[in-house]
Image (cartoon, rainbow, N blue to C red; front, side):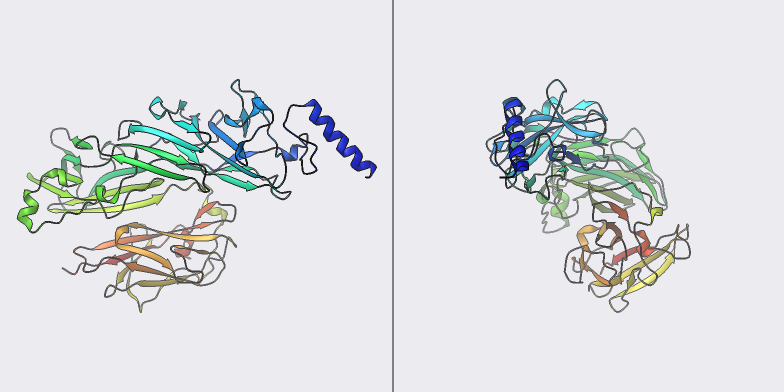
Length: 511
C-alpha cells in the first residue's frame, strides 16, 4: 500500500471516530467532508391555478421529505434519519432542516446502493398556508404509502392545491453522485372551469345552472414504493346536486355577438378560472343516456343530466339539459368548458390542458424555437379542404375541413432547439379528434426536433356527426433541459412576426 493510500485510509478512520455519521472504512465510502458528495435537491415549478400554489421557490416553502438507502431510511446518525424532515427553500436553495430550522446535511454514503427520495407539500410560503387540517394524511414508512383521508372538495371547500412528488430513484455511481435530487411535483386534484358564450344576435340571460352527480367526496393513497409513484383514488357523490347557481333577478347577461361570461361561480371575472376537484370518472361526467324517444327523454328527471341550464332570450324561457364531453377528468389536468348558448342551441366546447411543470416564462423573442422558411405547417390538400381568411388583427386563419370523414394530414419541420421535442395539442372539441405523428418513431402528438419534415395526422373519431366539431392546434417546443417554449413560429406570418396563423380543423354535421 502506498503512503498516499495509507494516509487516505487513516483520515477516513479518524473521521468515522470523530463524527456520528453511520460510516465504515469501506473502500467505496464517499468522504463526508467532501462537499461534492452532499445530497442536493431541486424542484420544478408548478403553474399558478385557482388553487393556492403559485411559486414553490418562495422563501420558507416546505416539503415533507423522505429518503431511503435500499429499504432502510437514509441516516447519518440516529437523530438525522431522513424520515419526514422538512425540505425548506431558504437562502435561494433547498435545504433539509430539523424541527428548530437548523440545516442538516446528508451525504451520499457509497456507490452501488439504490437511493429513493420523495415527498409532499407541507407549507406554501407564497400564500402563507400550511396543508389544511382536513388533509391530515398519514404515512406508512414500511409500505412507503401516503394516505389522504376522505374529505369533501368542491368549488368552495378545501381549495388547496395538494402537491406530491414523483420518486427519484438512483443507483449511485461516481458519475451521478453530484446530480441534484429532482423533486418533480404533481397535483392530487383535477381542475375544472365553466363559462358561457353567445354568438347570436340577441342577449342571453342565464337564470340558473345546476351541476349534477359530480364526485365531491374522496380519498387517495399514494404508493411511493413504485417508480414512478402510483396513486389510487376512491371517490363518490355526497351532495345532490353537486353545485347550483341561481342568478340575481334578471339573470346574468351574456351579451350578443360573441359576448362571454368566463366563470359561472364568479360572473365578474374577466378571464378563465379553475376550481380543484377530485378526478371524475367518465360515467359521471358523460353518463349513458339512452332514451327510446324524445318523450322518454323529456320525462327523465333533471338529476339524470350532469348539466342543467336555464336562461331567457328576448323574454322567452328555455331549459337545456346536457352531459359533458365523453372523457374522464384526470388528476393533473385542467378542464375548461365553454357553453355556447344561442336561442334553442346549446353546445359545449372543451379545452383540456396539462399542468406543465417544465413551463417557462421566457419571452419568445429569445428565439428559442427556429423554423426556417418553407418548413412551416402546410396542409396536404389531397386529404382536406383548406379555406384561408384573416381576423380583425390580420392573423391568417386556416379553416381545414375534413373530407368524407377521413384524416387530415400536414407537414412541417422545426429546426431548433436541436435534440428537443415538439408537442402538438388540441383545443376545442377534443373528444372528436386525435393527433398522430406519422414519422418514425411513431408517437401521438410528440416528435423529435431534428430539422426533418414531420407529417401529422388529425383523425376524426366521430362518425355521422350531428353537429359541427372543431379543434385548434397548439404547438410547443421542449428543450433537452425540460424548458417549454411556444412554437407559434411554426405557423408564423413571415412578413410580420407579430402575426401568427390559426389552424382550425372542422368536422361538419351530416344533418
